[in-house]
Picture (cartoon, helix red, strand yellow):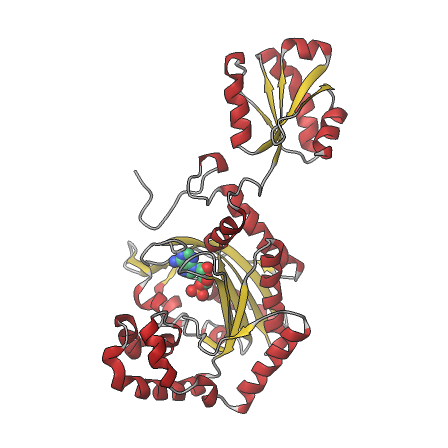
Length: 426
Ligand code: AMP
């Protein structure tokens, strides 16, 4: 039986065909978590299953996510439930319920977990995918936008990815309403020439037409009013502050006036990181500022800025850059005893090396006939060293340790110090 369409199993490296192995996921996950924790973000975990209402109230009915992509069903008590399509609503609901705003002047949280969207699966687009996200709540200040953007940039840098940061401002709700009307007025006469998707969006969410990838749509957009012309002084000044502080911190970005992002609650700053090596789904992550959302979900007036990033797309970008994921993780040593007696005698040594923080796997099947297979397994499981120990070696206290990358073998004394010396030298 295959997993449901658009979903995948996460398997150990040597069994994983797709590239989303548990090792590779952990590599990306830890880069984001470490960057967030170093900036003072703390983890928040909320249910995967939420009341449908939560997303209607927050993510918004006119977003594609709520309008056509949610996994929604009635539970056995006839309540409408939804598998969360994104993390922000749950996180903000939980913070407001815990009265975070009464206890602290600001909140900084991160989350990581599965999200669900009924989309047409393709490279980098799944129906169950993993998002890492952050939310920063407090009084509105451009330093918050900067702080959050810096954490994501740091994670991409740690992973060695070359990404482009695009930013824009979409102003306030009032300003967008006026622009929305002007945009609709300008596009209605040429409606028939728009792509099918954009024709639908003209009714549901005209702003999204701006980031249509269709070339003819883009041609037609050359003659429409510009969002920036509808923004007031406050919105323009705020955006200037964000841009100035990004520049002051040496963070490179492009101002993309067509960037609007898909969720209803954004206002002012929006941003996105793209990577041109991973095909059509080139947005690795993105986010933006929101103003009324926390209050809608039970909190106070706090404003916020959030970010979310798809782990799978980051993995695709890493694969495009580095090839296989094999280099990402390295386990230290596979110990292959050739008889059960050797196994028992080696356990103390193995436990001692493990307790120093090294990974030592004990090959559980002592079978001299299958040594080649055991060594191949060490290689495919990404061990750096293998050590075959027979009765004679044990008696003599001498053993051969093999570097699986260089294929070099050296005889050493069977002792913790000597083994660690070899492992640490490589
Ligand atoms: P969004 O929540 O739509 O702003 O998306 C933020 C990030 O989540 C995107 O840039 C992607 O990396 C990732 N993402 C969104 N939808 C999917 C999906 N269906 N499959 C894989 N990743 C996704």
